Amino acid sequence: MPKYLFRANLTAEGMKGTLAEGGTSRRDTLKKLAEGLGGQLEGFYYAFGDTDAYVILDLPDNVTAGAVATTVGESGTVSVSTTVLIEPEEMDQIAAKKVDYRPPGA
Image (tube, rainbow, N blue to C red; front, side, top):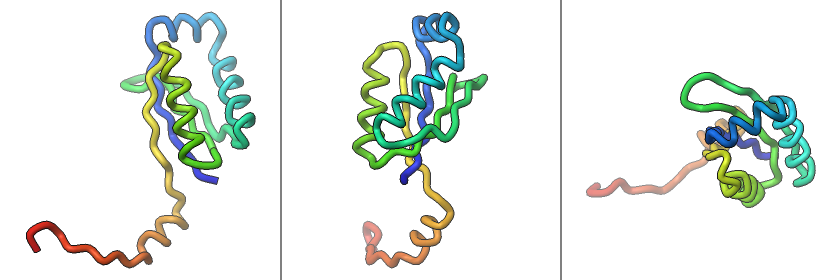
């Protein structure tokens, strides 16, 4: 199942809600969300720095991941960016895949 890294930044309102409910409540909410979509929560971490939380979800496909990102983002309490994660075995397949390509101007 594809893996997705979601980077979340909370607004002031989102931080207030997180502090009121507790950090584990957010993790539990995302675990339930992923399982309801046929996936699972692999990891959930809060962080210092540019990003408030990192979430890794196993989800069925890009459409499902997009639905998660847009639904969470439209709440107005968090902004989300999503990265598709590639397994080492997939990287082997990528390296073996031959692509016929001509660079611009060549």
